[in-house]
Image (cartoon, rainbow, N blue to C red; front, side, top):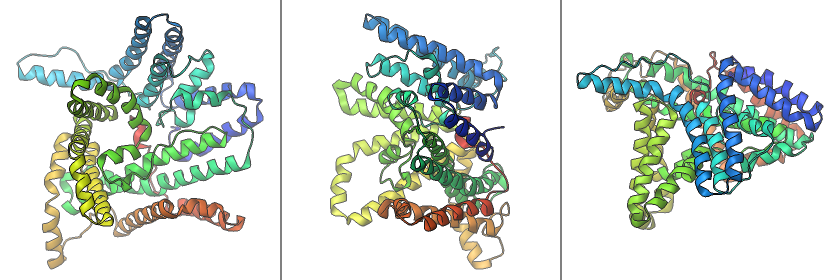
Length: 487
């Protein structure tokens, strides 16, 4: 399967070399063909689903753009949205809805005759569906003119670096770039390769090693100590960040090598001082999508009561954001908790502002960062747990960590770490996290990445080769797919 980070290293150079060899007028065809080839490695026939929605949205965009009345524009937009959401509903949410209907029917003594669908979820479905919907939505708002070149529009939806896990692009940012003639620029290529190298290091060294531990714990909860469970929660926070941000870095780097610039998707989210700020720094392309197309329209519709409208919009937006991540109540719970947290922050904004002025800024900011991180870790219990029962079991086991630490400090008769991973493995994982956060701190305060670029060639290439050696020596024994590929 081509969606392994190592295998991508063999696919990317071939496409890139051909890209620079071919004349500009043939490059969109190469990229579109490569994107189809890339996608078809998962399940070839699913390319037909993607092709069908591309055809619908392409013609819908033109009809919306040329519609003489607002009523017709809304009609064509509705057709486009129904087509895209319909695909999501069938492949991603049908069994979830059907199972809940079956359970509800059973409670009232009825039988649901509709069977579950036995089919795989198309890879990256939520990402390219949302990107496609942003196209027709932007046209309907008058922010973008419909693309008449069918191949260029198809490439906008299918551009292989960000096809399966984002970032979710708007047409204004990327389509015009496909018309520009890209030339080979050494600095641009090196910048892209550096970003890719950093992404591969985060994925192969940090995320995959953390996954080995977290999978072992979350998939065998009833044999774990409370200490092991709490450590796994902490590790998962960095696993999902390194895994998802690594894909974004690789995607942005691969595109930049060819001269295309994709939007930034992460901005040091663990430095957030509130949950609201966290979502401005985490998966920013999804946050802005929900903000522009769901949250803001919901608030506008409730202009008579702005406070109620904002809280209502926050709860709906985050609940649907949770559901976007997966068709399970665990994901919905994840979203609902963030909805409550952001609503609380909105209600208490003035009170918290007054409080911040009475406390030393350094203390207040760091306490706020810690509380935000702990809240994010708590909600990720529900995000990662296999079932709601597992999530509640994990929560019930957390207090037990104090008894276990106390017992271990007295008797030292029980391993403080779980046996699913060696003590050396734990040390490596903690070391990776400390180094990662140290680099983030230095870059945030002293722009360490830019400082490296200002050094002479010997120092720069020493850093690059050191990163490659780290990847080789500390690579996880097991390669794992990117987490967000399932969404």
